[in-house]
Image: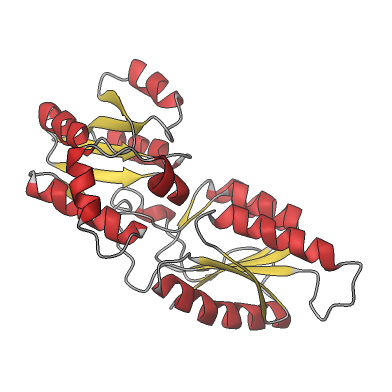
Length: 282
């Protein structure tokens, strides 16, 4: 069987590619010109079991044609496609244009869910992006040497309530909290950009009278009805580096529904910076 891989940006597509190849699966990669790292070509050049086809955002018909030619009946999405790319840079072909016109709500869940249905109607089943990476899912409990302190635990509790409400409207999955006050909410810019924005805001308050503590707590959750086929919460070392720059001291993720990339390096860097990371069961 040949697996189809719709590859976005970051390391996620490469991790999934390695996992699929380790199971002996041939992989046909649909690489998104606006997002996918060109390194994917090098992987294909060194492995006869990998073929790469470059497509632009919006070329849904070409995606289907490519998978049909490759004999793909199961596919997976891996890697982020920036929300602002989806709704600003996209140049839809006739098939995607028709799909967009019929959307009740123009958010990523609706769009990707509709794409998944079109693929299914064409005999291509879109499966969970965690199907090959379950060992990378965060397990419940404190993941770092340092556990969250009392103030950070209060921030996590408050942040979880806010994040659930925000995620329920498919706005974002991350909130940044200080002293049980919401400093930043993720929207189309993504998790790291939201953390950076919170850091800038706190920096601007340093010379002013403020009731907020300097240290920030980052809370990231899955959506209430998270479709694990796409947009799965992911944390990597870049997120930790962003937290360090922003002055964040604690990170809470959702157990069993968040992927941790480069886990050892991530936890080591967090320990060096005194950051506490905890996976919470909803």
